[in-house]
Amino acid sequence: MDSNQKLDALRTKIDLYAVPPLFSPEIRSRSNRYAETVAREKNNLLRVMASLIAYSNNAPSDAVAAILDNGVFERVFFHFDLQAVARMNPDWIIENNWSAIRDIRFKKKVGAIIGCAKLLASYRGANITIETFFDSYNLPKDLTVEDDLDKFWRQYDTLLAGFIARDMPYFKNDTALLHLLLYVGFPCIAPDVMAMKVAAAVGLIDLRRDYTLCSLNERKFVVRTVQEYCCSRDIQPAVMDLYLLIFGGQNHAQRYVRDGYVPLTV
Image (cartoon, rainbow, N blue to C red):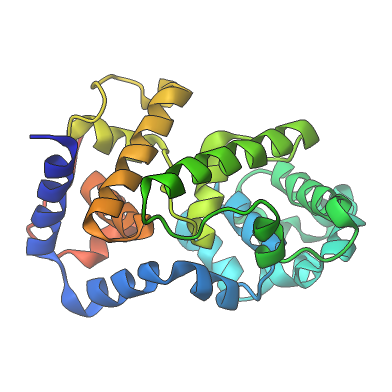
């Protein structure tokens, strides 16, 4: 089988076990992810970055979700007002609020969030939004032809180089930046350890013991292969990301399939 057939087989297996009341609405939401994310996150790029930083480094997802949903994070970081957060002192936040946000696991994340705010504020000295920031890099929001793919990677490389040059906390890493773009709604997946395990399981890359050691070229190859597949099947990469999470056995994603489904175990 070629790569498209392998990914077709992955989707077919999951579709057989899908729980329609949960699965179908999630597919629809992911198919319109950019507009929904802009609305849900109040067009606030710092809020998105802070949320992804909070969840990173194996922080307990349920506990992090609670402090995001109940407004604790919002209160501690001044409702993610860019200029206000850029002026904050991380030591003061830790001293006065760490007990309320300790589920993010690492105190260095506080400084990283403030660092993101400082760097975003330095771009234009104004409150940059999700839309204005990414529009300035001219990233395509949809992939319909090969030229869109080429443009995506050219603009991605420019964005990543800018983040590296400015030493952007967390998001100067290629996987973290792709995760940010996926979360916001751009047409990609995040080539994290789980995605790379799934890619190996279906034969896109070689099997190995440690998927943290996958090269940048391998990660880009997997993302582009999934993008090309999505173009050929007229689905959004964010939708395919859900299939990869279910297939890989992510705990949160297993709610979308009924009992009896056996996810990847290696």
